[in-house]
Image (cartoon, rainbow, N blue to C red; front, side):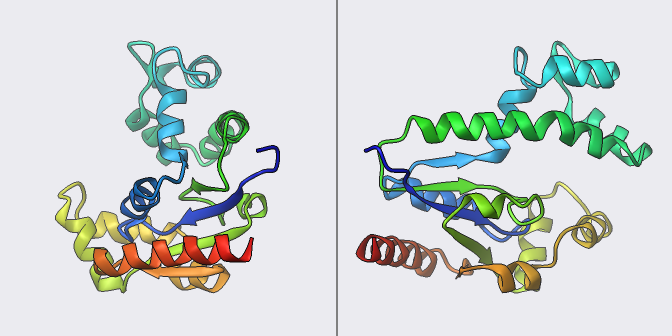
Length: 197
């Protein structure tokens, strides 16, 4: 196939079911580029972000890899740190995404991108798909993971684009309250895209 596949930009706030929905697309044979997994590759030993991050924050390296916890500490202490880190990581992420797209032989692909709308990456896709659940379900899911308390959760959510705004900017919203309905919605969406192609 010489023509570019139809690109779905998949996004949603923490605890909304984005990773689960991405897996549903994979289950349907749709290739998925995962921004978080790409960052992990870039930060791993030998990853493309290791040397440039080491130049600006040498203390963020542990055993030849970028330690995300140390970067988070740096971001918390230094208001300019996030912008400097993003200036390194975003071009490398773009290159990783382009490499993924270049090797595809498919009619549809998914870009799984938590900050799709925040970074302006929505201009790269043909459709913005937001996964969502009511706020109480979201909080319940996140707190059940046991990785943060409700105060930390509130702090993180206050810094993110509100779900209501993401929904307003979406071409399609899939509710992930129950997986059977979400999977049906994914299959229906793929069928509609192919019918309209």
